[in-house]
Amino acid sequence: LINDSQAIQDFLLDYNTRAGLIAYDLTEATWNFNTNLTDYNQNITLDKQLKWDQFLQEAASNATGYDTSVMSEADKRQFHIIKDIGISAQTNETKLKRLNKILSDMESIYSTAKVCLNSTNCVPLDPDLTKIMAESRDYQLLLDVWKGWSDASGRKMKDLYPEYVELSNEAVQLLGYTDTGAYWRSKYETPTFEEDVLGLYNQLRPLYEQLHAYVRRKLKAIYGSDNFPASGHIPAHILGNMWAQEWDNLIKELSPYPKKPTFDVTDEMIRQNYTALKIFQTADSFFQSLGLIPMPPEFWNKSVFERPADGREIVCHASAWDFNNGKDFRIKQCTVVNSKDFNTAHHEMGHIEYFLQYANQPIAFRDGANPGFHEAVGDTISLSVNTPEHMYAIGLLKESIEDKKSDINYLMSMALEKIAFLPFGYLIDQWRWKVFRGDITPDKYNEEWWNLRCRYQGIFPPVARSSDDFDPGAKYHIPANYPYISYFVSFVIQFQFHKALCDEAGYKGPLHRCDIYNNTKAGKKLSDMLQLGRSQPWPVAMKIMTGQTKMDAQPLMDYFKPLINFLKKENGEDIGWQPNCPSY
Ligand SMILES: O=C(CCC(O)(O)[C@H](Cc1ccccc1)NC(=O)c1ccccc1)N[C@@H](Cc1ccccc1)C(=O)O
Ligand SMILES: [Zn+2]
Image 1 (tube, rainbow, N blue to C red):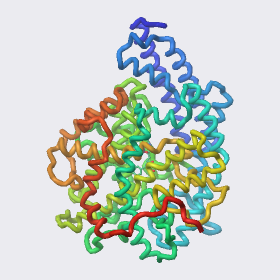
Image 2 (cartoon, protein in one colour; image 1 turned 30 degrees about the vertical axis):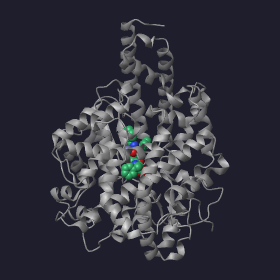
Image 3 (spheres, helix red, strand yellow; image 1 turned 180 degrees about the vertical axis):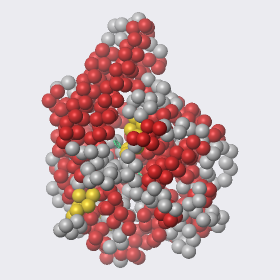
Image 4 (cartoon, rainbow, N blue to C red; image 1 turned 90 degrees about the vertical axis):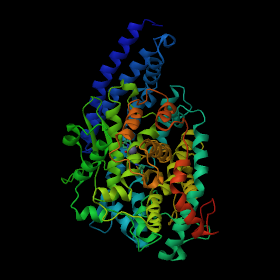
C-alpha cells in the first residue's frame, strides 16, 4: 500500500482536477437534456454518464492502493467518499448502460406525461394540472385529473421499476451494501438512523392527527360526508395538491378566522406585476441581507426561471445545479407567480447558496453535511420570509398583524404546509426501503403503497386501484430516483436552524414571528456551517448551528404550540382514523 504523503496529495489533486472536468461535461449534457428532452440529448447524456461512471470506478480502484492508516482524518474521509461510488460501481457495462437508460426513461415519462381534459386539450402537470388541483372544488373534476395523472405517469413506468430495483441493488452490493436503501441511509453516517426518524415521526404524529381531524371536518362540510368513510380517511384528491403532501392551497376554506387576513400574498404579487425573475431577485436580496454570497452573473445568465414558450419538452420539477467549476450555478424552475413558487424559489436558492459556500472544498466534500441539510437551507430562510412582519417589510402585505386571531390564521397557513407534509415525507422511503429489501415484491407495489398512505397520512384512493396501477411513479422523486427521507429530516431540522439563527440574532419573541432579515450575525452562523459541506460528520455541523448534535423536534413543536392548543379545543374527541384503508 502506498503510504508516501506526497503521493497521497498527488492522487487527491489529480482526482479533483479530472473529476471537475468530467463532472462539468456530464452536468452540461444533463442540463441540455433536462431543458430539451430529445433522443439526441438523451444519447449524449447517457454517453457522458457512462464516462463519468468509468472515471469513478477507476478512481475508486486506484484509491484502494493507498494506506489510509497514515492519513489525516480529512484525507481519510476524502478517500472513503471517493471509493463510495454507489450504482456507478457496476462494472458490467451492459447492465450499467441498461440501468442508466431505465432511470433516464422513467424521468422522461414523468416529465412529458399529459392528461387530456377533453378530446382536443391535453395538458401537463406544470402548470395546468397543479392549478386545477389547487383551485378546483369540483369533486369529479379533481377525481378525473387525479386518476388521469396516475394513468399518464405511474402506469407508464410500472414494468421498468422492478428491473431498476434489481439492477440498482446488484450494483451497490458490489460495494458491500445489502441493498440500495442501505446505501442511501449510509449518507447519514448514523447506525440508528431508521430508529431516529421513527422516533421523530412518533413525536410529531399527535400534531398531524389534530390537523387532519380539523381539515377532515372542514372538508366534510364542503363536499358532504357521503364521500368520507367511517374509517376516518380523507379522499386523497381534495387536499389541494396532487399527492396530498401540502394542504396550504385550502387556506381560504380552512382559515380559523375567515374575517381576518390569511397571509396568502399571491394576489398582491400579481397586482404588483411580479415576474419569475423578480421572485428570484427578491430571494437573492434576502440572502444578501444576511451577508451570504450573492447569486453570480452566470446564475442570472444561464438559469431557466420559466417553462420555455417554444413548446419543447423539459423537466419542469424544480432543481438547482452545481457545474463543479466554481462559477457556473443554475436553477431550473417552471415558475408561476404565486406564493408557493415564491417559496420554491427560496428553497432552490438555498441549494445554490450551499454550492457557493462549499465551492472551495475538495469535490468529495461538495455536498450537504447530510442530504437533509441541503434541503433545509432555503426552507429555513423561508421561515423568516413568510412571516407577516417580513411580507409587510417588502410590501407584499398591506398591514402587519397584532391580534391573536390573525396569529392563529398565520400558524394554520404554515401548518398546512409543514405539519401536513410530515407523514408524506416519512412514508415515501418507508415504501422504497422495503422494496429495495425485497419486503415488498412487484405484485404488491401498489397495494403496499396505499397501505402506507392510508396508515400514515389518513387518506385513501377515491377510486379503486388495480394491479396495473403504479401510483408511486406519479410522484417525481420515484422516477427521478431521488431519496425522500431528506425532506422529512429537513422539515424537522429547519426549525432547529430557525431557532438557532433567531437566538443568534437576539430575537426574544414567539418563534413563528421571527424574521432574521438584515441580520449578518445570524448569516455568519449559517455560512460557518454551510462552508463545511460534507467535510465533517453532520453532528459537527449541527453543533456549529444549534449547539447540540442531534435532530430535535422540540423547536417545531414549540413553533406550532399555540395552534395545537387551538386545534385540541376545536377537535375534542373527533380525531384519528383506522390504520387500514377503507374498503369500497
Ligand atoms: O422536490 C422538491 C424541490 C426540488 C429539489 O430542490 O429538492 C430538487 C429535487 C431534485 C431534482 C433533480 C434531481 C434530484 C432531485 N433537489 C435539488 O435540486 C438538489 C438537491 C440536493 C443538492 C442539489 C440540488 N421538493 C419536495 C419536498 C418539498 C420541499 C419543500 C417544500 C415543499 C415540498 C417536493 O416537491 O416534493
Ligand atoms: Zn431541494
